[in-house]
Image (cartoon, rainbow, N blue to C red; front, top):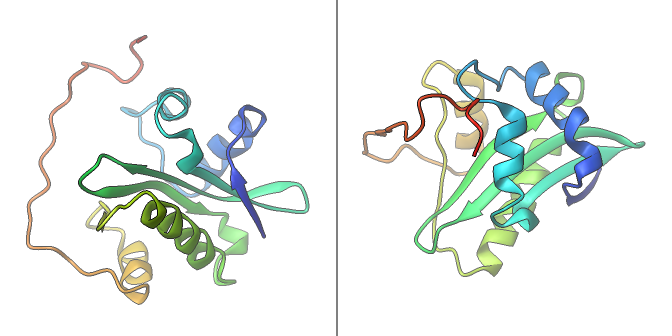
Length: 143
């Protein structure tokens, strides 16, 4: 798998990948999430490609205090081949290169497969409560 920075031509394939992986939600417009990411640290938005097809993604970010990864995805037909580990290692290294001291993840509590995947990579549960507040009434709103 070749890992590279996301490019605009990848958008349809990446959105299709996220849908296939069950990552999209009605309240999060994936195309708007991509548009926003391309304005902030686009070099940390990675895709994995095999034979010209996008089969993995990871959207990293660093706020100066902690790193984050969102939209980690591996095509269901390509799971169990080490591609998730590879793209995570790549985004971890990219974040490390920025000086990022710690990487945080948020995983839906019912996604036990993803939790097991991250635990196998050395991630552990922090004793925190994740809180959120919508600053927009809809992710479908224009900027």
